[in-house]
Amino acid sequence: MPAIDLSRLAREVERLETLFGSPPELRRATLDVLSFYGQRARRAPDSAEGLNGEPALGVPPPVVRAIGAGLQGLARRNPAAALPAAAALWDTSEREARMIACWVLSALPHEQVAAWLEARAGELDDAGVLKAAVERALEGWRRADGKAYVVRLDRWIASPHNAVQALGLRALEAGLDLPEMEDLQFAFQALTRLPRPARGEARSALESVLARLADRSPAEMTRFLLEDIQRQVPGIEKLVRLLAGRLPPAQRERLMAALAIAARK
Image 1 (tube, rainbow, N blue to C red):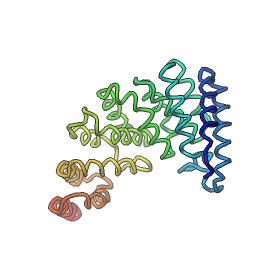
Image 2 (cartoon, rainbow, N blue to C red):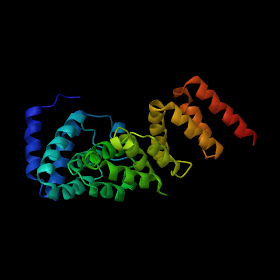
Image 3 (tube, rainbow, N blue to C red):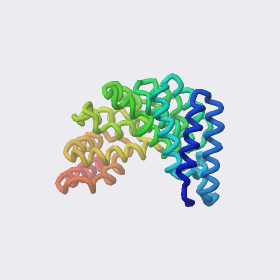
């Protein structure tokens, strides 16, 4: 990757900041900057795609972070312009522009960001953008109102729509360190409302959050899996085998014995 001229990048970020109140101009100028750095990176043709075919420009991550951080600071000072700016960047469909939109959204500490993302859940099919949406865009609201955050993610997890389920599961994982989640029973109760079997990105998100929970509380994870075995939840055998290695030997044996009994029924 070619060296980045930091002084030039700083000037470009400053120029983008002057366009924050004019979404169409911000969109055009941001794409110009991203395209410039993408071309300089000289990525191979097959790498200029998002993880699931989302358009991507191959922009070096430090460039995306610099632009994102600059616009995030401006969004904090001018919150009324933040949503229009984020929408203009998001609607480019470019992976890097959507990640920058997530930086902008992170400056807004209210639930409107959650509603904004939920309306676009079907566009979160790129794992990198989904990660940015949950970890970055929701960060301001998550810190400001953890109680409302956990209520919203509980509803997302119970959604009949796979994309919204994935958003909720990733939000659950991102919120595990909140004071509202100190009692992990909330997390396990929320997971019982997930329609099964989980599919696509929701399945990947489920496996990821269950792994975190297994590390945090092997005993509670064992109880959760045993209940799912008894209820013959679709896909439970695969999940048990996936998570068994994270659990102590005695709990592993209990789960394997329960699977064997369930198989004979």
